[in-house]
Amino acid sequence: TCALPIFSWRAMMTSLAWNIGTGAACRSTAARLGRAGRWLESCTAATAFNRAGGRMVIGLANRRGMGDASRIGEGELCASGLE
Image 1 (cartoon, one colour):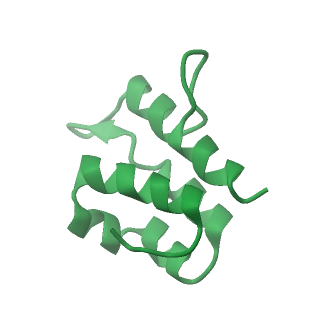
Image 2 (tube, helix red, strand yellow; image 1 turned 90 degrees about the vertical axis):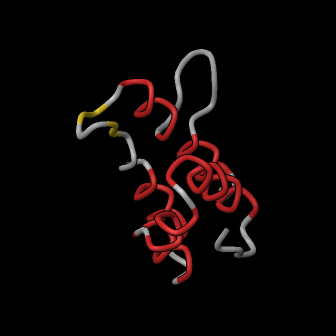
């Protein structure tokens, strides 16, 4: 994917690329912000990919965001590496 030195950010981007495709992930606002070193903003931008068929899906929102009781969300994973 769009390799940069922050491990948790790279993990989030890898998951995003797997789900939306590498081209879309690398052209995303999340990737652009990451390349600029704006890690936390990039983590937040990646949570926007929570739609399927034009509708917000709760499962995707939980997965991309801060997770739920059963798992860590990608946004939470991404931000946790920045602390």
